[in-house]
Length: 365
Ligand SMILES: N[C@@H](CCC(=O)N[C@@H](CS)C(=O)NCC(=O)O)C(=O)O
Image 1 (cartoon, rainbow, N blue to C red):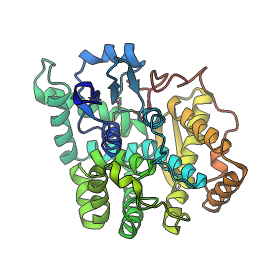
Image 2 (image 1 turned 60 degrees about the vertical axis):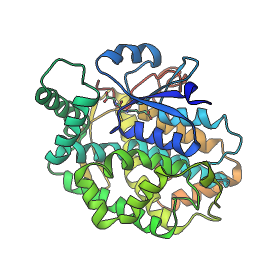
Image 3 (image 1 turned 90 degrees about the horizontal axis):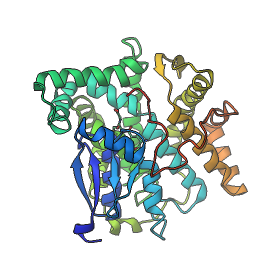
Image 4 (image 1 turned 120 degrees about the horizontal axis):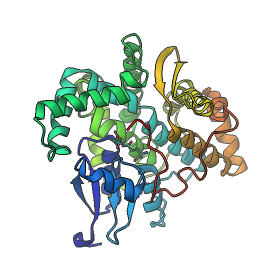
């Protein structure tokens, strides 16, 4: 591909999922041109081209539009024959997908919290977005910043289950993650070996444009988890040539605490979310791993995420099914993956991805 034909990546350069996609393109050496989305001008176009207004969106040189980082990456990967981002061991490959999904969905709320709850974060991000993606709107910048901060809090933090009471516990969970990753990246350069995998690319979502950029979590990383900061930069500086290193022969013990947290936090949340969608409760309360979330928003998209995890597991060989089931059960992360039994999916939900989305991650806007 020449740079003339480079694909276009539309988004924001402080966005969670845009940052994830950029990490992927860089690692794979796929040339792209980044362009900031402009609102409200692009909103109608996005709905027309990809079904929903969300970032990032990719336009190929033949004019086709794509959305959803998980399915876009899968689609681009199908064009490479080397499977270089997926561990060769099928059980580890499943774990890589599971970590990617957890990184996409579960760390979103804490990432938004650190950005929009603290004045330092909100000041930085509201200024940035007001001038980057809302530059063409004829309103004073102070007003755009205020509207943006209110929108993000209403949609993603206090409007999605966070309360003054549960914030300390949610932040403690983030610090625990930093500690777990500090241990891993002190031992090796990437999560699953001497080369990056889909799990690293997934975690680039919460880390690259949030935890390692927003003032409050960045300082925590500096002080408590410098190896994680190194990994964020290493991943950004990774190229195709680095896709040669060895995978780990067996899954190391330091990955198990992540799986335990997936079993104690993310999977029970997915269960409660699916039950809320099934029962038509757009807001729900839930106690997860000792943390009480109040008035969390239901997400139809995340019902589909749970279904994807199940389908992926069902597609494994008998041997890999047994290995992963034992591994996950050992960390309390097995049973919750299968609750509730029936999932309330929409007809052909997300069946046209990466070309067209049925639902947004959280359908507030
Ligand atoms: N599942 C999607 C999620 C994309 C997403 O939710 N992106 C956020 C920004 S990082 C967004 O566009 N939110 C829409 C909004 O706030 O209205 C993906 O993987 O690309």
